[in-house]
Structures are given as structure tokens and as C-alpha cells.
Image: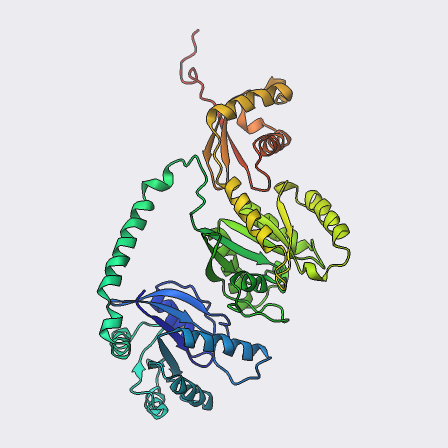
Length: 475
């Protein structure tokens, strides 16, 4: 991207709506409630022929630094300092407020280019608010409607004028981006369907961090990054959007998704919290490995177990992180108890890796990352058909399938149909009559004999074709 743009303004003026319009997707949560956005959210924007990085920010408010609003303001100011240009959004329908004037003064002191945007200009009675925006002293306001997409051409022209044509249209960067897009298209074609016999240590890894509210998810990611990138605090439920951040771990690109805390479904009543949970579920589906963060001081609540079960049913590679380990007394005894409970309460993820950590002090983070890599390696594993059929034959000798209604079930052939997660197909007679207990026996045998701990394993059964089924019976 050629330059970076930050969207700033007071709460509920339409910043996230404009962000979604420019990135072409509904990435940021939008609601009538003021103050929905709290963290910085970056995205790749496209406006006519412009390409740039855009950052959605929290609404700027006047508040003490130690309050939640004050910490949100600090995050927004950091985004302004990192950006090359700011889009200052005002509400033309409501008109200017004292907060708008204070923010305009703050942006003026920064000395960076600013484009004044009068949003909601399609509303009746918005003309007075539009003309009032001239009094801010930031130049001519651009009338737009982020919700309906009006005024986007004028916004494009204003951005080019503020940033300069040389910066807006760098020729070398365009060529580089074209090369990248072509290579990504080539990689995303037939290459994804090829069987990779070895694990690719250099491929970027997508990791989602999930858990109950106030388990320490954002603090954990900030410790990984070494900076206060995400908003944290003692209040539960601070994170609302699923925010992605990138960093390198031992030369490998890691893309982590911070998600909103997930409470029990019966307690989620407000529309905004429902949107946050839906965003977290979407992050789980698009991730490869999911870290479920437990509060080590109150672990294995019912909601913790339900979150793990959800991740396993989605087919993701899962790792448990017992956070706040610095608050645990007698860690050895507690660790032994946690391991026993993990094996007993999570039989569907037998052998799942569990790591004690502290996001506050940084304890155990390297071990957690190594567990994530090891679990992802197992999740991507493929086993040859020859090995599987030898294993199937040996398994049936040790424990044959039970006879159902006096007829024996025969398992004839086995192959792996996909990885991520490992899925297998077994050709057999009377597939619908095979008991669930024997399926669990096969699953546990695969997990133990081929070293696949902690990842979901799926086995599909296919009835063998009968070559004489369509022939007429002879009299």
C-alpha cells in the first residue's frame, strides 16, 4: 500500500460505516450505540483508482487517561501518529459539538494532512451542519454518505489533493502489487489441491485467541507484540471487534486474531454483544489454530468446555492456555490437577496440548508458540494409504467389528481424503450399522498409533459397491 489513512472523529458519526464502505466488506461492527469501536482496526481500502491502508479508530472523547475512554483515546492518537493522513468525520445531520472543535485543534497541532468529511449529508436538514464545518479551519468539507456510498468521487479527489499525486500513485509500488497479486493467484489455484508430504515451516499461520470475558486474551497478544497494540483493562468485555495483528516468531509470520469474550448463550441478550460473538465465531472458522485462553484461577467453567467443544466441532487445531499463572499458589499441584481435568473433561480432544502462561509477565509464551506450531503440524499431516490399510488390517485382528443382527461388518479399505483436519474414508459393508463405540475405537487408535494428539479426527464410512446388485435373479 502506498500510504496510510486514519479515520477519526467523535463517537457515532459513521467512522466504521465509512471503513466498511472503503474496504468493500463488513469487517467492523456497526450499531446505533455510540462507542462500538474500541480498538484500532486496519484494512486494505479501494477508492476508485486509489489503494491505501485504512485504520478504523475509536470515537475520540475527553476523558481521564486511567479510564476506559481515556485508554481508547490513547489508541486513536497512536493511530493518528502512525498514519500519513487523517479523515476527520463530522456529523452533518447533528452539527458540530465542542468535542469536534477540540479534536480539530488536536489534529491541527499534529501538523499532518487532514481531510474534513461531513458524513450523513444525504439527510434532510444537513446543510446547516455542513456549512458549520467550515468554522473548524480545516479547509472545505467533503459531503458524503457512508451508508449509501454518495460522494466517494469527491472524497477520492480530496485525498489525492491532500497527500499529493506522487504519493497517491507510486508507479513502482503498483507494479510490485501487481506481481504479488499474480503470484497469489497462481498459488491459490491448483497448488492448494496438491498433497504436501512435508510440513511447510515458512507458511504464514493464522491463530485465533478465544475464551471467556476477562481471561486475558488482549493482554496476551500485547505481550507477544511487545507493545500496547490492543485495548486492555480490568473491565470485562472490552474487546468487541475481532482485530488481526501480524508479527514474526522465529522467522515465521504469525497473524493473530483477538476476539471478544464469549459468555453463555443465555446471557447474551444485547444486539451488540451478539454481533461481537458472531465476529468471534467467524474468526474461529477462518483460523487454522485456535488458542482457548482459560483463567487459571477459575478454570474449567462450563463455558470454557463449550468453547473447546465448539472449536473441535469446527475442525480447528486447538491449544489450551492457562493464563494468569503468576496468580496461582502451589503451581505444581495445580498443574497436575489441571492435566487430570483436561483428560477427563475433554475426551473428544484427547492429548490436547495445555500450557500454563502469564500474559502479564510473559511466562510460558515461547512454549505456547511451540505448542501452536506442533499442533498445526499434526493438523496438516497426511498418512499414506499403504500405512493406513496395514493399520486397518492389524486393528481388525486385535478387535474385529461387532456382529449386528448376526451379520459381521467387514472393513475393506481405508484412505485419507483430506487434511486440515485429518479426515479418512473407510469402505465397508453395512456402513449404517457400525456402532458408535467402534468408531471411537478407530479414532482413538488413529490418534495413538499415528501420533495425532489434540486435533479433531473425522472418519467417514462408505458402503462397498455390490457388482451383482442390478442383475436380474435367475429362476
